[in-house]
Amino acid sequence: MFKDINQLTEKVIGLAIKVHRNLVPGFLESVYQAAFAYELQQAGIKYEKEKILPVKCADIIIEKGFRCDYLIEDQLVIEGKAVNELTSIDQAQLLNYLKISSIQVGLLINFNSTVLKDGVKRIVNNYLGETPRSQRTPRLIRKDHL
Image (cartoon, rainbow, N blue to C red):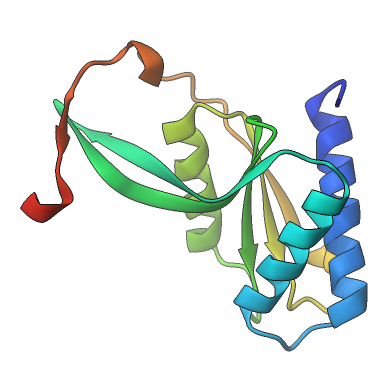
Protein backbone atom coordinates (compact mmCIF):
# COMPACT_ATOMS: atom_id res chain seq x y z
CA MET A 1 0.00 0.00 0.00
CA PHE A 2 2.79 2.44 0.88
CA LYS A 3 5.78 2.91 -1.39
CA ASP A 4 8.17 3.85 1.39
CA ILE A 5 8.41 4.71 5.07
CA ASN A 6 8.19 8.45 4.38
CA GLN A 7 4.84 8.03 2.67
CA LEU A 8 3.61 5.93 5.60
CA THR A 9 4.81 8.38 8.26
CA GLU A 10 3.22 11.27 6.35
CA LYS A 11 -0.13 9.47 6.28
CA VAL A 12 0.08 8.51 9.97
CA ILE A 13 0.98 12.05 11.03
CA GLY A 14 -1.98 13.32 8.98
CA LEU A 15 -4.29 10.95 10.87
CA ALA A 16 -2.81 12.06 14.21
CA ILE A 17 -3.45 15.70 13.23
CA LYS A 18 -7.05 14.79 12.40
CA VAL A 19 -7.49 13.24 15.86
CA HIS A 20 -5.86 16.27 17.48
CA ARG A 21 -8.13 18.71 15.66
CA ASN A 22 -11.23 16.77 16.71
CA LEU A 23 -10.26 16.28 20.35
CA VAL A 24 -7.85 19.16 21.13
CA PRO A 25 -5.42 18.90 24.09
CA GLY A 26 -6.58 17.94 27.55
CA PHE A 27 -7.83 14.36 27.33
CA LEU A 28 -6.26 11.23 28.77
CA GLU A 29 -3.87 9.30 26.55
CA SER A 30 -6.39 6.44 26.26
CA VAL A 31 -8.93 8.74 24.56
CA TYR A 32 -6.42 9.77 21.88
CA GLN A 33 -5.32 6.16 21.44
CA ALA A 34 -8.88 4.98 20.80
CA ALA A 35 -9.53 7.79 18.31
CA PHE A 36 -6.19 7.18 16.57
CA ALA A 37 -6.92 3.43 16.25
CA TYR A 38 -10.29 4.31 14.70
CA GLU A 39 -8.63 6.61 12.16
CA LEU A 40 -6.05 3.96 11.25
CA GLN A 41 -8.82 1.44 10.73
CA GLN A 42 -10.87 3.86 8.61
CA ALA A 43 -7.79 4.55 6.46
CA GLY A 44 -7.25 0.82 5.90
CA ILE A 45 -3.84 0.87 7.55
CA LYS A 46 -2.72 -2.41 9.10
CA TYR A 47 -1.76 -1.98 12.76
CA GLU A 48 -1.32 -3.85 16.01
CA LYS A 49 -2.26 -1.97 19.16
CA GLU A 50 -0.22 -2.47 22.36
CA LYS A 51 2.15 -4.80 20.56
CA ILE A 52 4.25 -6.82 23.00
CA LEU A 53 7.96 -6.76 22.21
CA PRO A 54 10.19 -9.32 23.92
CA VAL A 55 13.57 -8.19 25.28
CA LYS A 56 16.76 -10.23 24.99
CA CYS A 57 18.94 -10.22 28.11
CA ALA A 58 22.08 -12.38 27.92
CA ASP A 59 20.85 -15.85 26.85
CA ILE A 60 17.19 -15.36 27.71
CA ILE A 61 14.22 -13.52 26.32
CA ILE A 62 11.91 -11.65 28.64
CA GLU A 63 8.64 -12.42 26.95
CA LYS A 64 6.79 -9.22 27.85
CA GLY A 65 9.68 -6.77 27.96
CA PHE A 66 7.98 -3.82 26.32
CA ARG A 67 4.58 -2.94 24.94
CA CYS A 68 4.61 -0.34 22.18
CA ASP A 69 1.42 1.59 21.51
CA TYR A 70 1.23 0.72 17.81
CA LEU A 71 3.12 -1.30 15.26
CA ILE A 72 1.97 -0.04 11.89
CA GLU A 73 2.34 -1.96 8.63
CA ASP A 74 5.15 -3.97 10.30
CA GLN A 75 7.49 -1.05 9.64
CA LEU A 76 6.64 1.87 11.92
CA VAL A 77 6.43 2.07 15.72
CA ILE A 78 4.19 4.73 17.26
CA GLU A 79 4.34 5.82 20.88
CA GLY A 80 1.48 8.14 21.79
CA LYS A 81 1.61 10.48 24.77
CA ALA A 82 -0.60 13.10 26.41
CA VAL A 83 1.95 15.00 28.51
CA ASN A 84 3.05 18.59 29.07
CA GLU A 85 6.22 17.99 27.08
CA LEU A 86 8.17 15.08 25.66
CA THR A 87 11.33 14.15 27.53
CA SER A 88 14.57 12.38 26.70
CA ILE A 89 13.15 9.35 28.56
CA ASP A 90 10.21 9.24 26.12
CA GLN A 91 12.67 9.34 23.24
CA ALA A 92 14.84 6.62 24.80
CA GLN A 93 11.76 4.44 25.29
CA LEU A 94 10.87 4.69 21.60
CA LEU A 95 14.46 4.08 20.54
CA ASN A 96 14.51 0.92 22.67
CA TYR A 97 11.32 -0.27 20.96
CA LEU A 98 13.00 0.27 17.60
CA LYS A 99 16.14 -1.58 18.63
CA ILE A 100 14.40 -4.66 19.98
CA SER A 101 11.98 -4.87 17.07
CA SER A 102 14.66 -4.17 14.40
CA ILE A 103 12.41 -1.47 12.97
CA GLN A 104 14.11 1.61 11.58
CA VAL A 105 11.58 4.41 12.17
CA GLY A 106 9.29 5.44 14.99
CA LEU A 107 7.09 8.42 15.81
CA LEU A 108 6.65 9.89 19.24
CA ILE A 109 3.35 11.79 19.22
CA ASN A 110 2.29 14.10 22.05
CA PHE A 111 -1.43 14.77 21.66
CA ASN A 112 -1.29 17.32 24.48
CA SER A 113 0.65 19.80 22.30
CA THR A 114 -1.09 23.02 21.37
CA VAL A 115 0.04 22.51 17.76
CA LEU A 116 0.48 18.81 17.02
CA LYS A 117 3.36 19.22 14.60
CA ASP A 118 5.36 20.59 17.56
CA GLY A 119 4.54 17.39 19.47
CA VAL A 120 5.72 14.92 16.82
CA LYS A 121 9.23 13.57 16.97
CA ARG A 122 10.61 11.15 14.40
CA ILE A 123 13.21 8.74 15.76
CA VAL A 124 15.44 6.72 13.44
CA ASN A 125 17.14 3.54 14.57
CA ASN A 126 20.57 3.03 13.06
CA TYR A 127 21.22 0.03 15.27
CA LEU A 128 21.43 -3.11 13.16
CA GLY A 129 21.77 -5.67 15.96
CA GLU A 130 23.74 -8.88 15.93
CA THR A 131 21.17 -11.46 14.84
CA PRO A 132 17.59 -10.95 13.66
CA ARG A 133 15.00 -12.07 16.22
CA SER A 134 13.64 -14.66 13.80
CA GLN A 135 17.01 -16.44 13.83
CA ARG A 136 17.55 -16.46 17.61
CA THR A 137 16.74 -19.46 19.79
CA PRO A 138 17.12 -18.30 23.43
CA ARG A 139 14.87 -19.76 26.06
CA LEU A 140 11.78 -17.90 27.19
CA ILE A 141 11.06 -16.73 30.71
CA ARG A 142 7.52 -17.49 31.74
CA LYS A 143 5.81 -14.60 33.43
CA ASP A 144 5.19 -16.66 36.59
CA HIS A 145 9.00 -16.74 37.06
CA LEU A 146 9.29 -12.93 37.12
